[in-house]
Image (cartoon, rainbow, N blue to C red; front, side, top):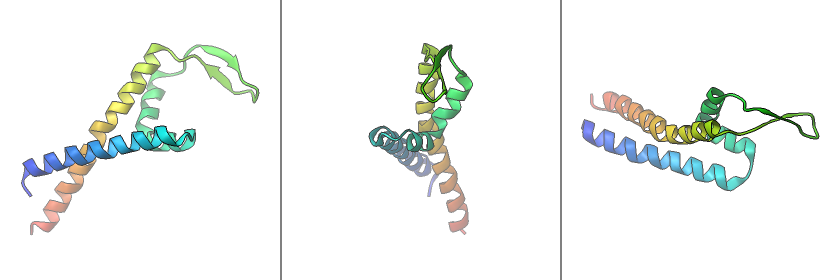
Length: 102
């Protein structure tokens, strides 16, 4: 397989995987499953840190305010999936091409 075909196939497949994961995460309604599927958003939210403390809920968990910085980092986290998954697919296709071209 030529490099151009690998690049095109990895971009389309990676974007499809990222889009499907986003759709599944937002349609299920489970925060735990969404956090697993959108792990890359969680990494960016860790970089953003906590916002100002609003108080505590009934169970004693702290509640933090979401700021525009958190919205921006969340959006960057969603977009990062459209870069991460094509790279993973390209690496898999390159390794497979190396083994099967012999």
